[in-house]
Length: 145
Image (cartoon, rainbow, N blue to C red; front, side, top):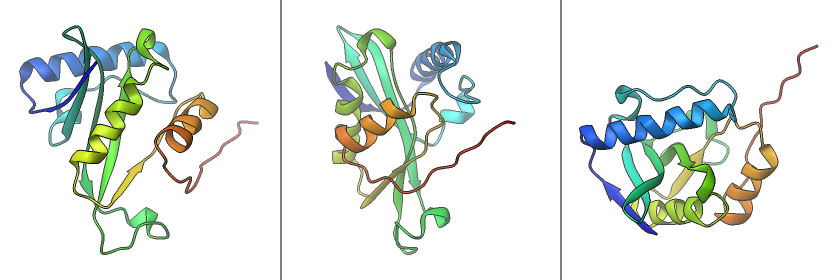
């Protein structure tokens, strides 16, 4: 498996949009909709490839998170992971972890933050906490009565 950071071009946008359409079809995240080019523009893009085929991606950007001031000092920038996705047949084989670890080595920000809306909270907490070493900060819960 090859992990790399790439500069966006039309081919990359096309591929990320195609993968995000697969993600939307899975219906695994609350409210997720496939990306448009403008959702990806301005982000750093990291890809996982197997035998020349893109099997996953991570994209995000540098920001300051006022909402996380209890975890990230106000005067510190952080890298916000906007999306991380791996095709179904390549999950649980290290691609997501490899993407995250590679991104972590490449970004200069001292803090990395991520939010998720997955329906499989046990798997995502295992990934973010146990696999890549993030610290749980907060949760938003809801119940429809």
